[in-house]
Image (tube, rainbow, N blue to C red):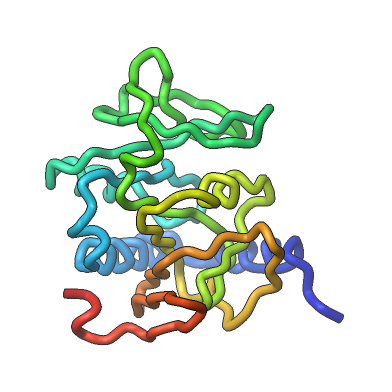
Length: 202
């Protein structure tokens, strides 16, 4: 009997909750350092990222790092009626408010809307991932829709316990270009996974 996406999501979320808080924070720092060393990060002038909640890889430090390197930061606002994401430029955490599903989102009256074509790197959240770049999110399909005609680079940040060899995929599922864990960077290209080598994190 095949394990469903819903069951995999439940299992991984449960495993994440069991990690010691201090250890989780340390692993998030390790993931962040690998992100900051990778080529997509160095190339990007504009980075799109969600505000993390719960046991997602912490992104506040990533936003602060981007600002310190004079990168433009874009954060999404969910449009539930259309199940779409709209990104806005974030220049201060004061421009955020609690929005859809309890997420911190930009307050449209205080921020500038960003065109999808202006985003160089999108950090794509998720719960479960495989080495081919497929992911299982929270079930809304927001990022799969957004990525259908996105031409920039995509990276997902995760812990090793969120990584599987192969997940069940559907026709509308969109893969990411790179997976970064606390232990490795995995490049995905033409359905072939290239395990990280020293020169891939230059």
